[in-house]
Image 1 (tube, each protein chain N blue to C red):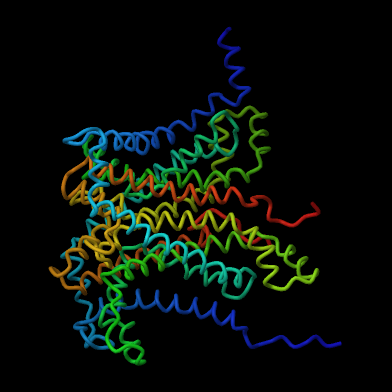
Image 2 (cartoon, rainbow over the protein chains, first blue to last red):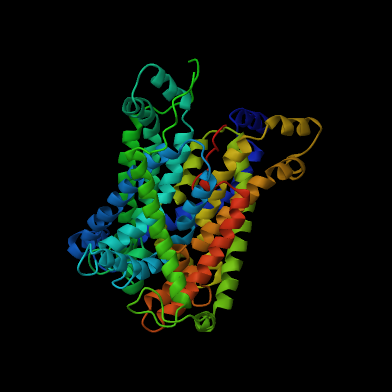
Length: 293
Length: 280
């Protein structure tokens, strides 16, 4: 076969010189993401002592390391669930057009851009024993002693809500505004109450979007690192898996252990996302616009 | 016939929703406000507001934390990351938007993965590799690490943008004899400017706020503002809390300026994901 013929045959399948434009980006991702990832796997399989799986074995054998998985899930899952579930009624009420919607969404973006480090600093001041929050509670007589909300589970949880809720809300809002309102109007004309309209029409159309939102919010919450150190209790109740990985690699210089912890972290996250997306596959995912069908 | 008067009184559900939103905003305002007030306060222990006000902490923060070089590094990292990720990402998103080829889904997945993975997961092996090759600890390592999520981000935001440009324009140019390079520079580039602007501003916002990757790869003279802030916070006790807060306020102000600039070009929801505005 002549080279020309081969080129034509490839071009018929959509492979030609213009695909080279993908090259630089693919090269970057391969060199800076895929190669380090494989390298990390290789490092984790070559610990200083023991067999190829010794790093993983010692991670799972040591309760102090192993429990970080449960700790992380115990922070990330409730935070992500709360963020998504709280977004639904609020976005449902605000999906129409109203005055100040743009201002509201703009203000909501602020906590996202501030990031976890600044949120942590603010939470330490605001929720601390002499912060404004405890002053208000004490002033109102709701509590007798300051509530302890920093340097424990709640500090981290609240920091995840502050950065994660706007994120989830904006996503849910955009999914909701993609659903044709005439579908609900048709339901109303046929005599459906608001509960029926919401649970039989809107929610099924929204559910795949909620699954995606949950995944993205979960990724954010799962990789919590700075706030777990700053407003959390990094050696106890909020010793999340990223702290375990960081300590192994940079405090103990146990690169195999650090890489193993990082890979366990990625796997756990992928399992959760896989489960959610698998469930999402059971749902209806199609056009959300009305039509004559 | 008169219509029934519109109810002014809100339903309990509306009260609950607006109450939750108000509570959230009060929380956010408290978080930002307490940092702001503390950074201007002289002494603030067990009272509602500080005893007096001063701006000394800003001068102190500026000198103690050597903020000028830190800001310089932040700016430099942002410029390089944004520039490279646009240059590399836009051609790739063009191919992904216009062509269907064998393995397109696999390529798309490959670009999606760095965004889906928690930064710490790939950051630790990446930092190890970068140390191996001598990049980490310098500006170049920070830039390389930050490119990992930025290039896919540009690709994922630009692909839908290119998809909505009518391919007939390009075909017409090709009929008139333009080569790929000319189509890019003369036809596509001007049409793409708004999209490129939007996505580069988003990359800047994400890079300034990106903590984990910079933290893992930065050396003492290549810290960005957010990493310097983290170090000064986790070493608290050495320095006055107020001067740490002053630095936090500088960071906030920088972020807010970027945000205001960004919102001139993009819709708030785009900061989160590329989605369409409501159609009406």
